[in-house]
Amino acid sequence: MALSVIIAACESERIPATVEWQGHAFQEVRILADLPPVIQADLGVGRPGLDGVADRGRPFSVTDLVDGNLPMRRLLTAGRDGETWLVALEQGGRGYSVVVFLFSPFEATPKQKWVLLERPRTLREVVQQVSQKERHER
Image 1 (cartoon, rainbow, N blue to C red):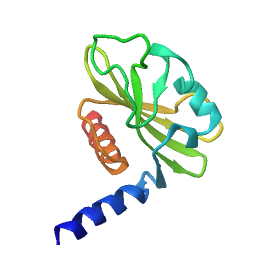
Image 2 (cartoon, rainbow, N blue to C red):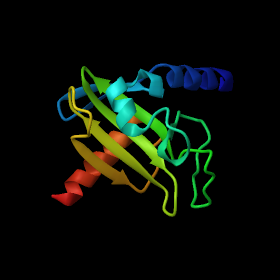
Image 3 (cartoon, rainbow, N blue to C red):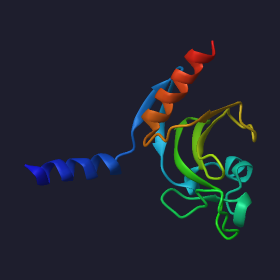
Image 4 (cartoon, one colour):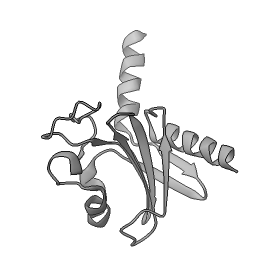
């Protein structure tokens, strides 16, 4: 029984989720290479050190004890609906946070940005936290 639960958990981790939000159906993306080049460039993918972004699960500078060889940010998760992208990055430093960007089709800069203080684990949790933040800001 326990083995089937572990296998099911591993399988669900391999299958990207689809999350509906604000009229979009975002398909989860888990690696930086799957983001469009224009968004990768805006985020700092491929840049060395503090200006760069680490891929999901890779080392990055989490605290304000900065290692100049490591980026200060890391991909947490992303979602794609056609040419619309929702990207969540962990950001280290004096105060750890998660920064979420909404990119519209063919735009190099984000249309919207949110800062989350709690670390979501999945795209679904990112959307839930952003939705709560929007409700509280109204």
